[in-house]
Length: 144
Image (cartoon, rainbow, N blue to C red; front, side):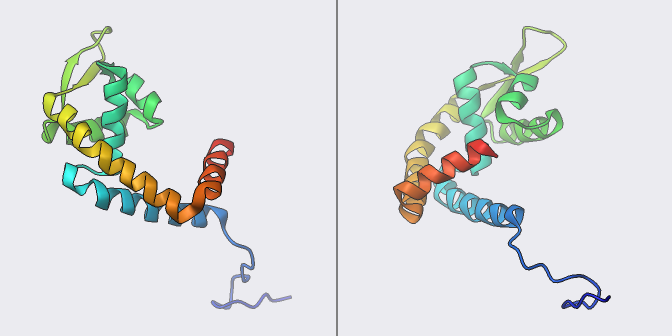
């Protein structure tokens, strides 16, 4: 029995791909935050990482990776980008074999500039989803 499809060789997918839907929503949401955070000079990913560093103080890259739920090589690349922007600097870690990072005064200032912008992005997402939708989004993310 031959299955018909657009390409002629693959079955037609009649169900929605949840992964594709979540990725599309993530791209759109990230683009919104990035555009709103633009006056602060950072992307959402950079702003989020700066916030994690601020909360942790001087933090090893390994611990920062755990906090951000990113692998060590990705954290290294992201921290190097923040170093080039002079928003973080390297520091001594408790374990001398490990690199650590801390905010610079410019990084602190970027967080101060970015905080109200981030709040505006939050308000826009909640306005788009409604309070119930925003609450459902948080529950969904927790369960995945």
